[in-house]
Length: 114
Image 1: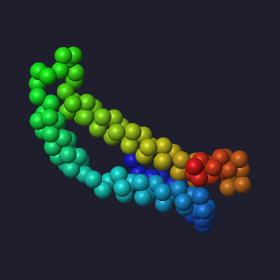
Image 2 (image 1 turned 180 degrees about the horizontal axis):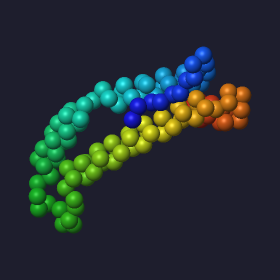
Image 3 (image 1 turned 180 degrees about the vertical axis):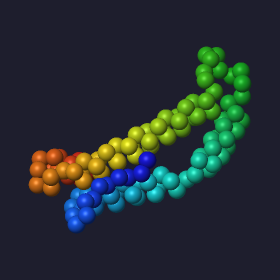
């Protein structure tokens, strides 16, 4: 999801809106700096390492393979990244529509400064 920050013609962005846009943009750049192929390659390498370090038959209690736990963790992280993108977009929309002198703007400012 892309960051959506509404701006009416002839209007200017507030300092908070500009800050939010910059923060969200830098987060997206960092998040997109590693490709899906690179992630998959790293998962395969870790899977191979985990197989080497944990020979079968050494555990008494059945435990899911470490690679399976790692795959589930990666899926969960990707889901969280999507949620962060969605929330960032929503926050940008709220900032764009907030009255710059109103209570909503004050709440959003305090959230951005945390």
